[in-house]
Amino acid sequence: MSPEFFQVHRDLDREGPGSAATTRRALAACGPLPDKPRVIDFGCGPGQPTVTLANALPGAAVVGVDLHRPFLDQLEKRAAAANVSDRVTAWHGSMLDHPGPADLIWSEGAAYSVGVEKALRRWHAIASPDARLAFSELVWLTADVPTDLRAMLEAEYPALGDVETTRKRTAAAGWYVIHDFILPASDWSNYYDPIRARVATLRAQPCSPALTAALDESIAEADIYDRYGQYYGYVFVIARKEVP
Image (cartoon, rainbow, N blue to C red; front, side, top):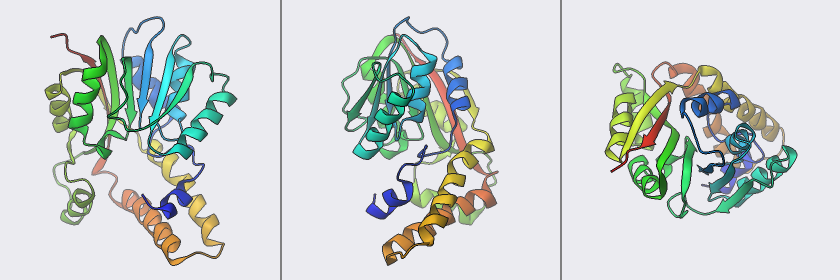
């Protein structure tokens, strides 16, 4: 992604729709975990879910994995502020490269970046025998999607499918789906409202053409959701590793 994209997103709390309440809801659906679970949050961004997991699982060792080092710097600061630095580790690299193992694999809105099927297979390989998986994925919510919207989103993410497609992809990678739910609209506001505020702040300053384009793109993305949000959203899938 461009430097201008990161200028817009620098120091934001989240890099996608979600909330601490949604993270806790998905965690509750995972069922029993070991007393001291090994947790990996893939594509953790600035680490809000990572630290929420550490707080909710007092015995856990939690690793946040991301390719963008400044996001991991934010994670480390967030963990220090929450007094969980002793149990939270930042790992700089691809979500396909961490060797594991893990009792709980987490990923909010990030698996698409490497291909959800590829990510699910890789995570299955490093998961402990009775591991749990929780990840969110963009999906179509209805069949009657406007043609212009379908063309727009599928140009960015050709593999975009519906909830049932995501369930089938999860099962095909060796995971047994326990539960899933759609993120509420408030989780999207939780992401886009701070972006709108950041864009307004940056527009008040001299902007390069590249930054202006990035600001316009950020607002256009938020406006698309405001107009078409009934047609697409995120599904949070919770699954367990199937024993061979």
